[in-house]
Length: 85
Image 1 (spheres, helix red, strand yellow):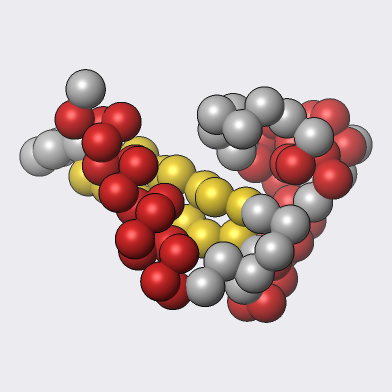
Image 2 (cartoon, helix red, strand yellow; image 1 turned 180 degrees about the vertical axis):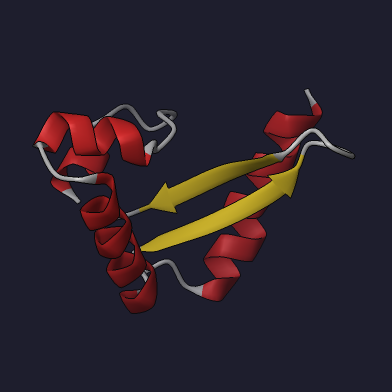
């Protein structure tokens, strides 16, 4: 979690980069991400890029639990706004 929160606020969370920085395997990083999501400190959004263009994954983490209203009313709105530009 410290590796994630020590970056700039607009930094995108890439599991491969975190694994490389920490010396952990990608599967270990994925397990930690699942634990963080389970306890509420991380949320993941997957957006389609269009037909046969793949899926883009956006991860959001905080040093507080990300409650539903905050995620829906603040984080998702900012994501939609940034994607529309």
